[in-house]
Length: 465
Ligand code: NAP
Image (tube, rainbow, N blue to C red; front, side, top):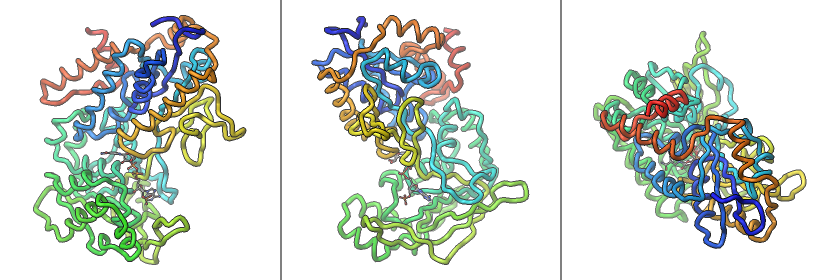
């Protein structure tokens, strides 16, 4: 790559985070022929792809095919990958701003929301994000333990993450054994004594966040029979009003759910129960501080001032005995040191991707956001394409108009700085070697790959070559 940073030469953009939003933003910048730009991507983990590697469920391999597009993007000679480099630890955002024309944050939504109810801290009460990261071999979650010796599990929330968690709990071990699930998770799930999984929605079926293909799949599992409570999937008057003006996809979703009414258990090893109009109000613990039950209140719906249907508690409650509970009530972004953050929304305040300082209302020069940290944790992988295009267009416009100040330091100075702060940077070429190793390890076991899931394993694998 050529030296950059002065007039007539190339623009330099840093992208922080290597999930879909980061890669699509890089792609939108790199394919602008009129814009001579070099993109450096930083990832705190040794390996790329963020939620595609660590979020997408192992039994949904087709979705992971998105990485082929990311590899094409990484193949551009103007692209570099800096794995194992954490912004906020090895380098600050201010340092990046001294070396790049623009810094684009694509850090996703790394943590979860809480329910804010008593007992949430009991042993056996977990976030779905922990469980997902654990079964996907995320290095930070490798050592988590989940007591799968219990018979009944609750998953709170009816989004696609809740569906993933419930489905993985219900899969037969043989089905998981041919995926890229982490070895430690496969081993634990083989021993699982879970028999009943309850997925709990606080509103009705017409407001469920999961998508049709995902909920339909729950009705076709080899490892679990599905059940619903007929009264809970019947539509109340307000939902009927919405459905009358709703789209075909919503009607299809309701057909799928109502098709589950009256399904008889067919002797599958597990039972998956989809519940609606119930909210956890308390987790009840045993003498050892472990979850033994969840108290639910039954809800009805009302229309709020914005026209949305919201849950309202009735005086009817029930106690559901469960030994494990996963809350899957939405992800949440975490602040990046040195970057404005909207704590209430859990994302970086921005206008079309230009970061805004809420104190002054002015844009923060050189700073941009893309993906979940920009818009919140919604949408599928493809949703990041138009989102990234919007941010990239702002970056490009600011570069071309000269709004983005040139970096005060040279590219060579930057390389020296990184080497001083983190001697163990992993490049995309390193990742390609690791990828080949993982695929080879998987081939002998009939699996798409067997993941290397600690930095030590990664280092050893590279050193052994
Ligand atoms: P989500 O779609 O926003 O669902 C969150 C769920 O939590 C909703 O059902 C929500 O109910 C519920 N909830 C929130 N606060 C609650 C509370 N206090 N008590 C009870 N329930 C509560 O989020 P997600 O499942 O984390 O998924 C994030 C994004 O990733 C989504 O866009 C999803 O489609 C996507 N994703 C896609 C796939 C796939 O394509 N296969 C897989 C995984 C994730 P309300 O609606 O009532 O607020």
